[in-house]
Length: 380
View 1 (cartoon, rainbow, N blue to C red):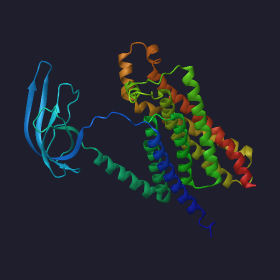
View 2: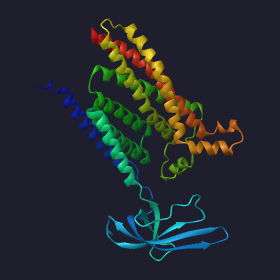
View 3: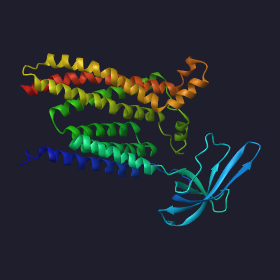
View 4: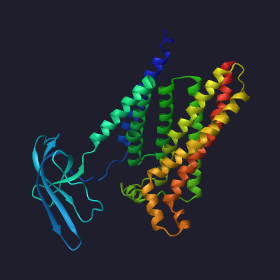
């Protein structure tokens, strides 16, 4: 009876253990972390614009500031249904002016005591999350339609991955806990949980896990070594400096933050390569009656060469695309390329690319090796 429903039992057990890991980790971090951070208490309210009252301008020696007064109805919270008067301000310090508010727009209002109007309500941003939610729902529907059961498992793994990063890893960093430990714990959880939910427990999943852990371990060790060799401080941008100001009694380890960013950024690509290699070689093993260690090794290396070219490009383009604005500014305002490529911000970006590529490069032969051993043993 248990053998018949073994896969279902393992699936449910994996889901339960994933929930327990996230909840227990979150509770531990909240109890042991230092979250005594001063936050500005600003009242934020969602609202829908009902009418435009007045458009006015204020001239100064620095330029022109545009004001648009409007009425809006607050949605949600203790003031649900209340109609307030608010102001949209496009001041002289705004590089690109925000779209003028119109009737029916959904906006976020902030209550400020020193606002340039009598009501105190000022428009902060347009409410954009509702559109993003719709886009996310469409993605989830398509994922389930095309993937069926695998799509549901992939969606569940994606949810657990996001929860692990934003409920476990991020609070552990802000709370001043050991970033290295929690990064390794979260990466381990993501690898095991994703592979089990998507592929279940099998020799193929075991090979994929071993290959993935091998690649991530290489990335982690190389990051720690290069951190010492390159004399990194961890201050890669202005945001890094602000992290140092979160706590007065102790400083956040910025080098560990760099370690976490590289590890989390590489684990997805490495897991993709490891699963692809394990699945491909498993099919080779299933289609050949006289499959040997040498046959699988040769097939794995041939498949790996094809995968490596595209995956390295994927990793490089992903990192460049995520920081393209910064790269453009640095290139535009730096006359010396030697100085540019020795700035810590650029050094860390290059380190992410190289370390991730090393992880991908070594994941292929390692996964191939373990596949040749475990698959032929299983075949015998």
